[in-house]
Length: 99
Image (cartoon, rainbow, N blue to C red):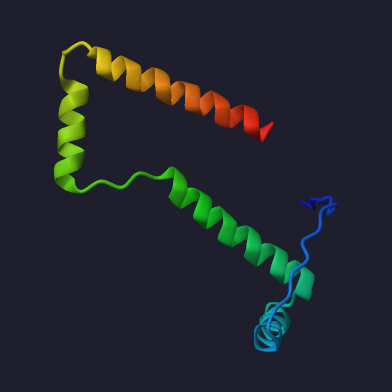
């Protein structure tokens, strides 16, 4: 299956000569053009960072505490409801900024 991707955006930046030479060497070893190598490496790095941003890691004790709260039959307090409303407002505002 062949996929054609549109390359219609640009990034321009400067590198040290040493980094440029390492990138060129790695691209040759990978059998890619420097542009394709750099674009795929940048995309991979960006994906890794964004994935880490979306993952919440908890210590075992924190996880157990969180799960116990989820299992509890207690109704949310006014503070809980206010925090949830604030969070949802922040999420809506962030979504609007991305548009």
